[in-house]
Length: 101
Ligand SMILES: [Zn+2]
Image (tube, rainbow, N blue to C red; front, side, top):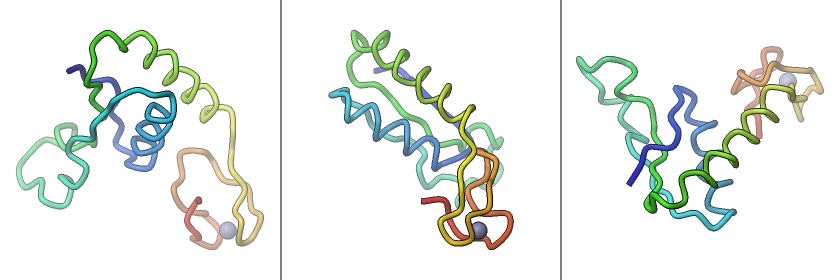
């Protein structure tokens, strides 16, 4: 089993997991809910993680993740509620606080 992806943004991690699964790769999430119970742990230790079950899939999974990262870096998103443009790193609209869905 290999750690393939981690990010402080849980939405990004879930997105990566879903895309990897849609490519037929077996993955599991770790630390998904750790941040609420992190106590004295360093913040980095509580980031949600995507683990690849089959090490042979590593190169394929890496390529998929590179593609996701490329797309998400390029694309700002538009709020469905107020049509405002938001930076891709925001989970919620800066203008009306609607969730990015
Ligand atoms: Zn909005």
